[in-house]
Length: 122
Image (cartoon, rainbow, N blue to C red; front, side):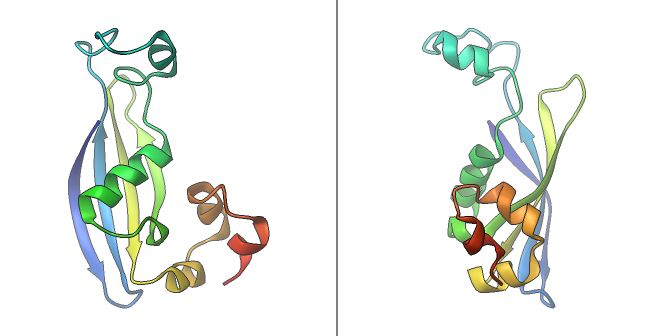
């Protein structure tokens, strides 16, 4: 999986960084490559489906060197017939600021392991 930054913008009013990115995943040469298990192949790892939101978040955290608690992926749209997806992510100054601004369903998508009460508090 390779992440290309299409556009990056600092939003000073909302105290966050907004990122439009493209995820390039898999290629015809990678499908069934050695070292990949049949379970990985069935799931799409290494040559099939769009990576999960969690996998993309982890890659963005590594790329930008931020804490995972302040990065949210707003949306990801796979391109039909291609091995890439376009996405939009936001990196906040603080977790409190993120929870104050972000819509609750976006927080639930990005942090599914968080208890309901925790995700709903602002």
